[in-house]
Image (cartoon, rainbow, N blue to C red; front, side, top):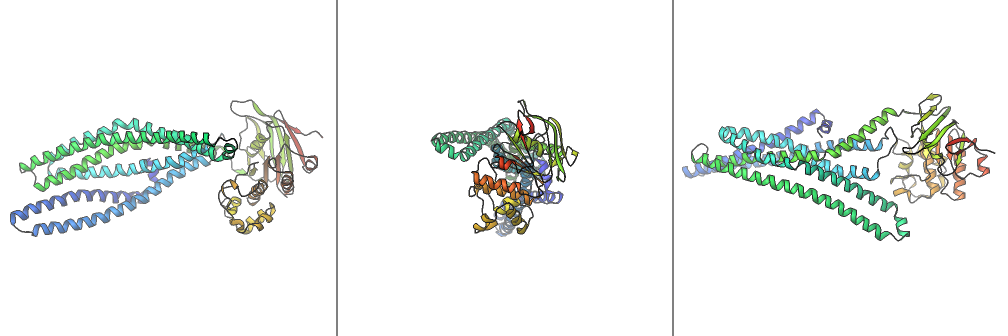
Length: 540
């Protein structure tokens, strides 16, 4: 957890620590101010004069105002520091989720939602806030201990020794807290997965009359999640109750000892109150320290998950070469590939894709057509064979993959084409026109600022395909790998997409399809067939 605080930089760390230290010192000063006020009342009674009380009350009011201002400033500084630390945690988590690992595996979306949602809230409320509490409690304890020693060394030593009781009790609950937090993570992932499936499969549920059964499954998942939260609350409540009881018993004992000291003239009457306040500043922070350290440890499973993702991302960056522009050709030679736990999907396949030329790959379902595109793009690692770009072995081509089900972000049409890159409207419009979107844009009142909505629901399948092609053209991809882009379209729209792809100048296209009529096939530079994992020119 501490390493994320280093993201603040030395200057901000020092400034934040200074503000929190002054806040802790203010609490100690308050104890002496209250002691002075009581002693002044005693002096006023003895002197039969209100002057000591007026003077002490004035100082107390000044202290109260200064303390309020200081606490407000400290809270603002702490909030700013917590924000910066939280951004560092979120950045590391998101980076691990978004950057592909070396083996090309993907993170389950429910895990991702849990990690960037509920788990981040836990890190903020328990981890980051806990570190601040540890620092604040440590400073408060040191200041209070020094003050008690100044009042009476023996009394300070007794208070410090008794502090051990409430400080040790919370350690008994560390394991239970960590287990409860892990249970929440597991239940939250299962719940998020259920909600995701329900919303994505709503049409299926409705058509089969399974809405009620899905609602029942949701209820079960929600009950498990809320039950895990209740379990954590119970463990936390038991911890708080046990430690608070110990802290109260110790504080009352110290007050009784302080009263005995006052009876014997070792401290003043006001000193009893000061000792009580300072003892609280030793005991309560000591209890907080032990409690919060246990809670911080319960965040470890979340931080371990983030670290594992970050390590995968680092390996992915190290192992994956930078995409290379396709100036001459992309060559797949003697390629063999098998998915884990299965036999080879691709066997000794070779293909040379020349710049600007168009290729079609046909074959039955499960023949390995889509896998060939994964190997060409570099997304899948070859078991054997080579991938070369312009004769450079091991290079990864700078290409775009267009899938059958084009994904559109819940943003504007401009953002979906430009993918939030620095492109002018003229550049985006030029790519859109080349992709055959002119009529669509003319019909949209908001043009490029039109909201796409979740999943691109407002656009047809053919329009989504053209948007995907516009993306590739805007980003100057010299190679398009098209995976069954027209299989879900009607004949007219499928022909429009085929015409668009085949008409792209200077762009190499490799299109996987199971539907290719002879007229369209004749327009490709080469048609290859995938059968039993092997790639060969289709027989005439």
